[in-house]
Image: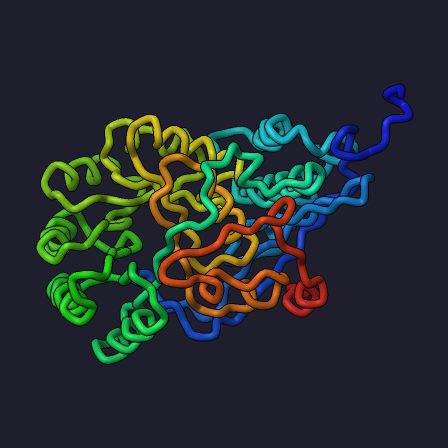
Length: 383
């Protein structure tokens, strides 16, 4: 059989014919409340990559606000660089898309690339008839550990009620949102520990909410109450602050959801300032770049724990596949709000529904292992 007559299957070329960006907005079932504020509505972009083999891949871009601007980048800046090229040349496509804009990598471009990249991995898995976790090398994990996210920054009674619901659902690891004032934060740390008991794993996410001096006080309270990490205590640019915080406290530090590329994660990983790196696959250039970040962390005995946040089922599922395959995986965030982006967009139930006893099964279907409900996409599309 010559190259000209070779069928377009896993054994032959698969050409990209179209790239479509769907800007979506959802109203959350209940607001997410952090040190930054209250979020009742968020957005994303679902990226659809079509091929001449009849295989379509889907990806997700973290575009929480102004989703049409992200869609414009995908369709105007990235699509012309992809149509007509072989879909399985994922690394080459990543580099080509990165060169669409000059300057330091980051921001909307890398987040837009993430959506395309995830879709290309979905195509590769479907063409090969394998889940993405297997294509990434696999580690034999059929289940991954997860933690419930999150007990919001609410008054004591409401926070207690959220904690109780997670405990009743069998979560044995739970994230707690933390913010100023510091005295109230320290009281909340003690209160949640006393209510949860010593057998429940607890961590805190500050969403950059503290200065270094404030973070030191909070870190002492976390250490005294046995919390397993302190997430994003400082703004991501303050790498010197992170190093100083690591030097002066013994609570493990976690961060990385604000990093776009492996270069941006490198210094805090190489110096072992972080105990856990938390890239978000829908921000950090997709599966290709997130994998590089996780493997860099592994080389320095730093753990990998995917960030999910208010994202959708595609981001969550891609993160599950990475979790199953990365050697230094620790635990994955399981966002428990049953938002339309997780509940309505695909045939796969969200992790918060599938999780049992603090674990989540890894999808076994080809690619991501989910099918999109395009009627739901139409309902959520920003017109």
